[in-house]
Every structure is written in C-alpha cells, then in structure tokens.
Length: 162
Image (cartoon, rainbow, N blue to C red; front, side):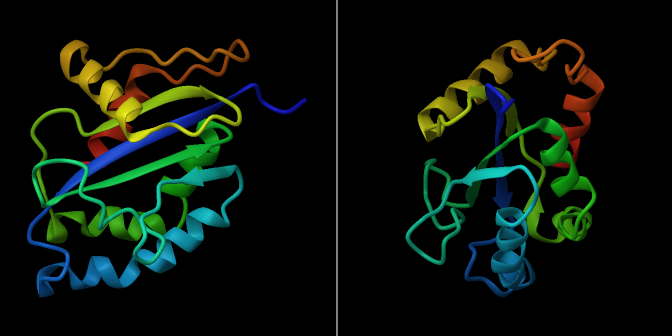
C-alpha cells in the first residue's frame, strides 16, 4: 500500500559570501552532483528548483541575499535520512563551515504532507515560524503507529543543518 503521507523538509543557510564569490566555489561546484544524487535516491519525490541550473540556491525568498533555501519531499523520513547522513551528501555537511555562517533562529523544519502534495515556500515559512515560536517537538506520523521520529532525531537534523 503506497504511503498516505510524505515528509517535507526545508532548510536555510546563510552563505559566508554571495554564491559567485570564490569562497563559495567549492559548494557551487558540487550542486549539480548533489542534486542529481537526491533526484536518484530511493524515496525522493520532489525538490524546489529555480530557473537557473535546476537548483533553488539562486532563488531569493528572503530579504537577506545570502540566505539560500533547500526544500524537498521524501516518501519516508528514513529515505531522507539515508540521503542526508549515508551518502556523498555527508561530505558537504562536514565542510559546511567553510561556506556557511551559524544561523540565528529556526532554519530547518520537517512536516508531513499528503502524498502528491507539493509544499509551497509560504507553507514552509509558516513551519519555520512555528518552530521559531514553539521550538522543536515530536513529529507524529499520521500514517502508521511506531514510525514517530523522536525529539533527539529532530534535534540532530537541526544541528546538522547549522
């Protein structure tokens, strides 16, 4: 039986410089590779893309020009975790301090969406605002008992996006 719900995620990062600055070259050089890895990963459903090169990094969705946005939808939290923590993507996580500043405030959120629903940026901003106001909480699974990520998992996700 196909899942009734999928997991959506947004994460923000504030660059140490604009994307066309040499400081950011190592990150920008890996975008196509990492996005292709996501697109081909088990459980991948959708990711936010812009007009330039199929990634969302050049979209300016916040007043701060250094903030970049990543949004995606996955069939399960386990699929998202596999991509984030057990793939080549981890190389970028390890190097993030070279490219990104510490982020003040909520910059990552996870939430369930009905299968087939593509979340909007405004929807994601509401999730971030809620997280900012209320803090992290359990993300209960609407589809089946026993698949609830616990607070430590959400904390790890948020910490890893810093």
